[in-house]
Image (cartoon, rainbow, N blue to C red; front, side, top):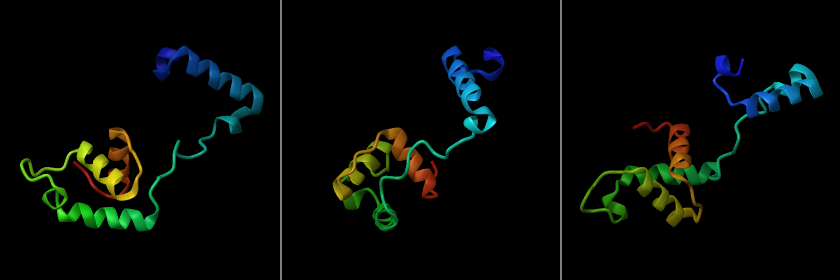
Length: 98
């Protein structure tokens, strides 16, 4: 079964334990693993700053946005640190794509 589900034995065992303890309801999703660390107002401001472009924020030589630059900008504006994966997920939630 582990191979069919493409999961580790540890995950399968943990799911089995949850199922034994609470039945099918114990396996239901409880939603996303994390919530956005920026509020609605901050996300609106971030979108406006992104629209200004990298040059407006000091990246003049290579004028492209990168996940690292997004993370740096978020930290500068809001004092919140994000991993590159977190930045990618945040931008996707905001409607941006590569």
